[in-house]
Amino acid sequence: MKKLIITISIILLILLILFVPLPSGMYKDGGTKEYSALTYKIVKWHSIDSRYESGYYENTSVYWFPDNFKSIGELWDMEMQEN
Image (cartoon, rainbow, N blue to C red):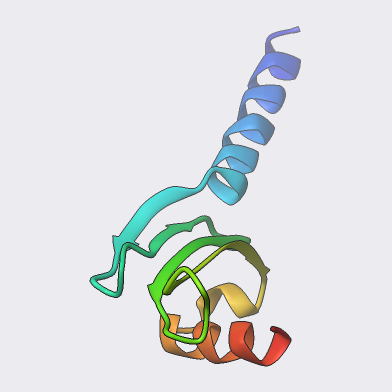
């Protein structure tokens, strides 16, 4: 029984490390925020962009492995290609 509890605890710890995002940056481009985990990255885009009526580009994107290791500039280029 004790072995089962230890095994389950270790599995839960590994899952937490892999999937819980932590704030990793806020950029001075209008307020873009970045949250990173080992397997993915969430970017809440809020960037000043005159191409849009409101003057801002706002979107939330999830980038899975291996794109989660790219810089914010590379992710911005990918985001603009999609839109």
